Image 1 (cartoon, rainbow, N blue to C red):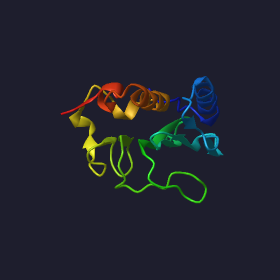
Image 2 (image 1 turned 135 degrees about the horizontal axis):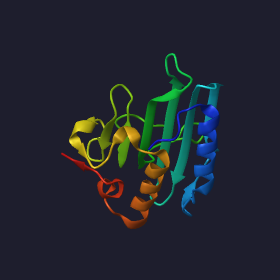
Image 3 (image 1 turned 90 degrees about the vertical axis):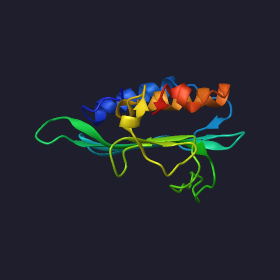
Length: 167
């Protein structure tokens, strides 16, 4: 399941615990600490980059949360989990990405319901209905990051590493 959505403070503790427990591979760098942007207790976002070497690749995590109407809870309204080759960097050293850049996998809900962009066609949007074995909406960001690490370590197809099959 994705992290808690109760409020920013609960999520921040969860994120810091998961981030602190994560062991980065030797060929992985975190160019800057994860950015948790806080608007108020019920509205926040997180953006996090990991740069991988040999071959050059990156992982980008983005989540955006907002308050549920008439409730003292938040919900994740947008997310994007990206893992793919590092094509170019911006002036700040972060990946400068384009939608058509190659990916190993990208899972997001930008512009439509949760969907998957497969390795062989990064512009394709594979909806949840065609994905078996993985609930895209409930994928945990740390599970995604660890799957990318395993994929690089053992070369197993990302479909197998994340446990899904495209129908």
